[in-house]
Image 1 (spheres, one colour):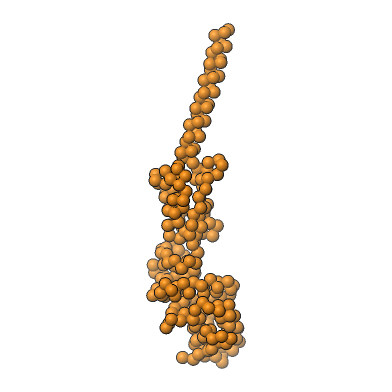
Image 2: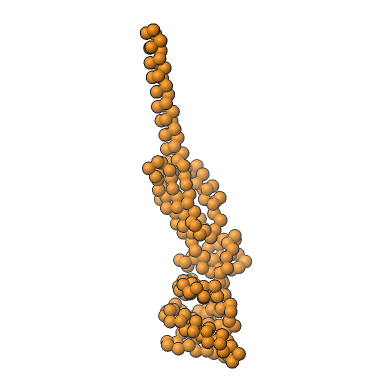
Length: 233
């Protein structure tokens, strides 16, 4: 009887040791191989899922995750074209969360090679990007691109104009644009007094629609204060 009791105690003790060992091994495995959850933006402009996941599975990045070097992971992911930034953090249950944020395309610089401009005036290449965006001349200087971005951001606040602009270009240091529904060019000049310029532009569009049969102006100039100048070339 005593031998059976001792055997039972030994068996229970062995099972406890086995459970503790398995649990410890599982915890070590989870620590060394944590679950990684990648949260992509709700409005995503770029097909980058495969690229990001292959990057994270690389042995080098697995080491960074194991050591908790999240800033290096964020830097590497943020270098992927089209990604503005990545935020990485660890939950109490050991899961690693990576939140991704896209750059927002504002305009193309080339329809053939798909170079686009984002909100920070970065010029990025993405052959798969499919969007209806205005076109900026590929010969535009960095300084003029910065000005055009300011103009686009302000025009995009207007529900009508956001889908109307066809392209932007520069002549003699002055920025021009045109609209899909009208056959005249628009001289914006620069990003100064944009709200006033947009107000004048919309007022002229309404007037033009009413008087189109009597008008043959092919350019309007928004650069003058408190007035709009229409030009016949």
